[in-house]
Length: 380
Length: 250
Image (cartoon, rainbow over all chains, first blue to last red; front, top):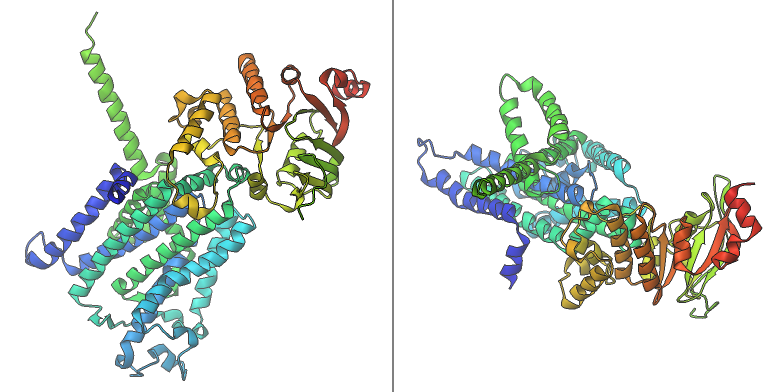
């Protein structure tokens, strides 16, 4: 019964997507561990980590697509929720360093000793416990989104005004986290992590496991998002996106629906950030940069807004291009390329890669049907 | 506070609202009885749409009382709360959810729990399907159940919106220019439909089309500059000298 409902919820696209993830969960460990280093099929650990990073971005893009593609909330501040989740994870990793830091203080992280702090600030307590830190990964972004959304949606701030205040939100967070007094390592952020749950962060095995966990998280987030958008609540969200006041006159509390999906999306973004930090080894205030959040919008637009799978694919494609571009002679032109990509997608592929592909396939099928009809009709 | 102040389903008394000094509604008083159908006519700018905005909570009046069912003060509630009390509204420009199918449009409108978590865990049920089937029959869109609402003709969209009102099953329906842009045949069919609905609902129809109002055959209220100019049977009000002046100009 439950499996039936689960299968009914997934369309062909979703099944392929989950199939690919499953294949990667099986294949990547084999290619990384079993296939010898010299072989052309061997997947080196640096590549595993790089893909893990892309997958974190894919989760972030999925989270944004849930609010932008389905509820019409164009958040230009989702990077803030991502970074908050990252900081929560970073705080746990900092506490794990213990006395192995440069100043060898068993309780205080290095930057606090450097600032001459005598004791741990209250908000750093509890982060030595992994379950508590994981709870904060979800709660910190969730709470910020809830409070922000509570005021914004109740006052019926919509459209471009909402987008602008989400930009302001992430910018304000950037400035706050830059300050040493905030107690999050200021400009340098949190880094020099040693281990996670007792396993060394740098080791090949930990990196592989983190990658697999990120894949799993992407699959789960996708299933959750898909469950929401295919439910009646998902239909209400689309109704809000397309005709907000009409939805109100039908008796739906639009602000509650927006608040729900916005908060959930922020928690997803936080989870993505938490998986990102141990794989890249650092979290600093630059993650709050307004530009980061805008880039997420580009990923979603390129992949295909309101398709979920497209958002994830867009994130991976654009970041693949970014890595390729920024490591060669073309590096100085990356931002131009990114800007052009956004403009061209908006102009010529408004439905993104996924939407355009679906359209092309639909057309081809129609043509095939027409051709088949033409050949079977006897000539008169 | 369940004390009934009045027996009227809808009771407006001395309602005024001004936008930037312009009095859109000027001490308007109007009452609708339970089960009544009422046509509201008036020249452009008479305040018809603003009146609907006030009843449905989109606009708050500066002064005056708006009571629903004799007990509820509508001026204190927002759109969603008023809709859930049992006041449905059809807009002048047909606004259906274009991305959804005809069936889903009705399903969203269907009376039921509108809270986030109950819609999240909502399951299809037979009684709900039957209700939708019945409405599809009434609005004659049964063959288009799975069609996207964006692909409907203008008249079909108007009908779908009326169907959505039916699905809400409100005590009072506010219908703003239901036949604007319809063919004569469609207009006639719509009049039948509304008369059908009026059998067990109270209905307020705002309309320009006099032939249509005549078809409805109900009490008529003429609005002018935000207040009631005349009230009564259509023949009675159209014989009124002031009404003629307002419509034809002095």
